[in-house]
Amino acid sequence: MKICDLTQAYTPQSGGIRTYIHEKRKYIQNHTRDEHLLVIPGENDSIIREARFTTITIKAPHIPKCEPYRYTFRLDKVYSILKAERPDVIEIGSPYLMPYPAMLYRRYYPCSIIGFYHTDFPTAYSEQEVAKIAGNGWGSVAKHLSEWYAHKIYNCFDYTATASELLKRKLLKMGIKRVAKIPLGVDADIFHPSRRTGTIRQRFALEDKIVLIYAGRLDSEKRIDVILNAFEKSFNRFNGALMIVGQGPLEPLVMDYAAKHPDIHYIPYVHNKNELAEILASADVYVTAGPHETFGLSIIEAQASGLPVLGVNAGALQERVNPSVGVLVEPGSVTEMANTMFELSTNGFREKGRNARKWVEQEFSWYKTFSKMYRLYEISVNKN
Image 1 (tube, rainbow, N blue to C red):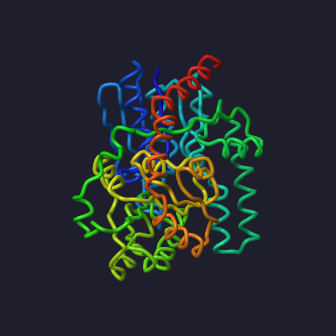
Image 2: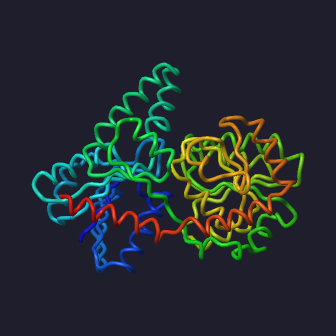
Image 3: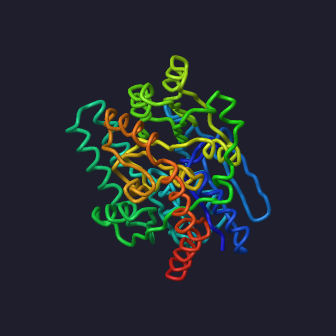
């Protein structure tokens, strides 16, 4: 069987989707004899073949204000690739344009199409961005139009996968049929409390501080501004520091805060997972303010590293963070997040961190993720 991942949302610096695809390739390598094809936008047209794995990059421009992400309109090129490579399963990671060459390919060549609902785009992008420009009324219109589009496009696929029960219920409510919940995983050997090292803390003079950390995309969807403002309101109440790790459009904002505040530290995107694991395990509390998480892969990595989570009571965080492993506050509330930064950092965070590690060990692994995904592939291929 040849499996193809077709997505716009993949770059060398991207987060969850990139990790998901890399872990899928490990599973294919170690547990199957199948082939894998990855088709993504990039700086140039290129083809890399390595045994059973092929990566084809289509030259595409950056999306303005969303670097390093790129967007390709060369759907004829995508169709030509599919026609030449003949995949048996196509997994769609981006619902905007990539489905159309896949559906055209399926007209002439037998294959199954699986959509993975990685991003809750009607709310996270359409509603939020339009509301900023034209007000809440038009934001609501944009959300409903996007939900209508999601209903139409995902019902063209054999199955739609999503990583949380909350999103599964939401998709079913939209009228999307054949929805499967497939939680993501974590490499619990790499992300482990034993990775904690004094080197990271010495590098930033954090030896005696309680370190809060965020690691991920730096964009408006993740509400980085809430984290920064909350820390500013709370830092003088306890001996704390904030580390921000990542890359994205809000990088200048983070750098500005770090330049002005001696207890805010910025680390650009970390390519090496072992290095990221050391940074996470060397912190004390993971903090995130994004209300539109569909799973929260970075949250699971932090929990595997032995960190409690301070997050918001919205999206998949409601499934990922219970009172034994962290605290959730109202989305967008700088004051509540600031107060909870102080309270969590001075009362019980180490026990919650130990509980988080135990929970991840019991519930999450990439082997479980791709065993379930493979069953979906096999059912859809046999059906076709």
